Length: 56
Image (tube, rainbow, N blue to C red; front, side, top):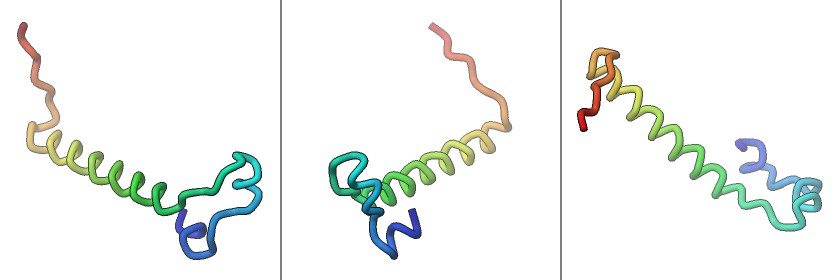
């Protein structure tokens, strides 16, 4: 992703999918996924690594 951000999208990939590659969208998706993963990891640390049972 970093390479495509600086060098531009690959012409071969664009030809393969028959559309332009939205590199900035991929970057934003990766950042959002990383942020969600980090928040999940911090939440697990705060719970002491144990999961709470959901009662009906």
